[in-house]
Length: 145
Image (cartoon, rainbow, N blue to C red; front, side):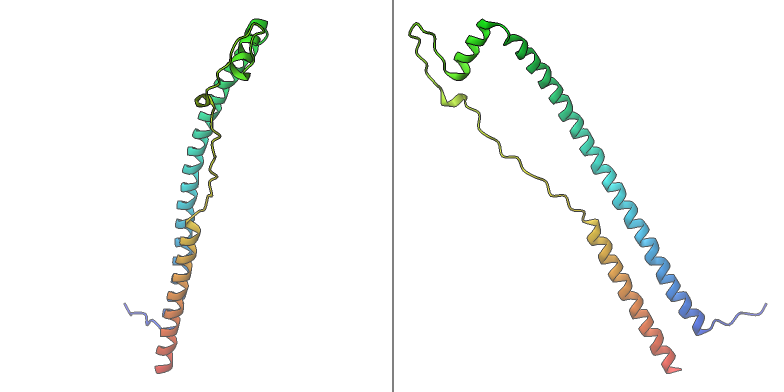
């Protein structure tokens, strides 16, 4: 069998198309891992929202029970005395406690940023620089011949 002679042009094509294929495969891998991470984050968020829904449903049932209790006039009077500092007409004294007041809670907002976008950009730039370096070396080799 005779060996095929590999020309410089075929080497150049191999390097260029191999680099392009490498870039495409790398992008697919990075995008797939980013999507899997997004799926994981969304499932965690779904679980958190499901827990919040359960808590809110329990709170709704408690508020419905409280609403039923408020239909009773005696309970309304007791509730007004406890929560709004009303007194009976027969000279009842009210002592307010500042320890019973609830403090307003500050809620934090989440800023969601995906670090994979930066990784994808860095990998693409790195691969492009490698391709440019290889093409530069090939041109130097072609000029020497």
